[in-house]
Image (cartoon, rainbow, N blue to C red; front, side):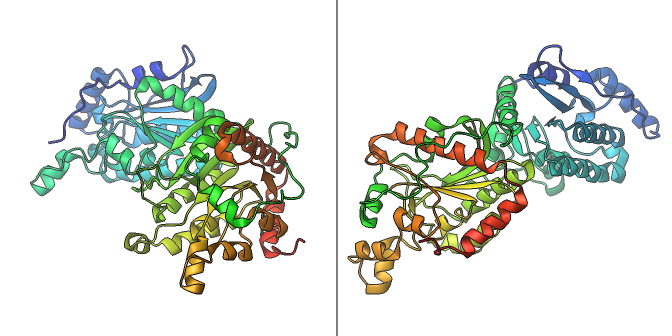
Length: 506
């Protein structure tokens, strides 16, 4: 039997009091109309109201979270296990539709056993109209945030509980499709322990974080600070000194490759730590995969909001390379950027994608193709950064963008030069000459119109980590702010033309 969490779980009113700014909550709830209950159901409803102090299994309204005006939809589990009947569904739909009309973000806090058995199939089908309301809200470009509480199962978990742009959960919460008690009754055996708990869902990339109720306001504040400040609302940044009209000279390709492989070279983690503000890490694909080869986050650079996705350099003890799940997580980030109307920043720093049985069976080639497909046509501002190594399809999948920034000693090639040498000469000793001939370094990439903006290294980023990251961050802020003023249709045509005509600039 699954172990119950030992912490006390807040009811709906208590959660509202903890999460919202004091005295900011206004209820949107109208009196409910019960769906012609029989005597037994009528008695159950009366007992639920007496026990919970609520008139239905959800409370809705608007308030402020650290100054952000937010619509809140919260389950009351003590009311018939938070189950959703027709009246509760109408209340949820009404709140979400009003939030959409008023352009407000929604914070959903489900804690429910699912649909209400006393109302049968009609209650079950009400998950469709709730999902439709969430879809319309998301398609309008408004944030939909979810805080999964103990327990959330059944139709609620399979609809409005699993549709968040950002989804976090209560520690130790029971979260799953089929509750363990139902599983045991149906199949005559106990469900495995510690599977349907929030920490396990986090480990499998299904949720973004595990936080206590008192930590939730900070998460919501950080998310909405980023998501409610789309690029273009601020004065364009002044062109930084890093904006070069011609590349720096004097470094051959092989030297840059060796410099880029220094384990002390700043990576994406340090770029975010030293150069970004309001960083909110996300986690996994949201579909059961979590590959350490890629980082996904929301962040701001110089006041410019963006979705960040990029390669994680392996830690010294790690041997893993970017697998197909990384690109599925990347495409989650691409969808977030397009749906929420904020720019996408990709950061490339990879020695190559994973070459393994698991990568092939996981569809690595297809995931690269689908990432390219998304990047080329993404209806959002896009900026890519060549931060260090840029080998193979793993680099290519994140490259196509409106503007590409490159660190002075970054590079881009079809394979690591040693691999190209092995193909051509059955030996790796020709790697230096091949890297020069292939034009993999920044000077060649700039000359061929692939790189637009170069950030110098003095003399290499590994020896000036913070200063380099600050220069790179300034370059990113400049490009994001400059692109914000360009209509998206113009950006798309420019993006395609850039790659169609590459190699023509001399």
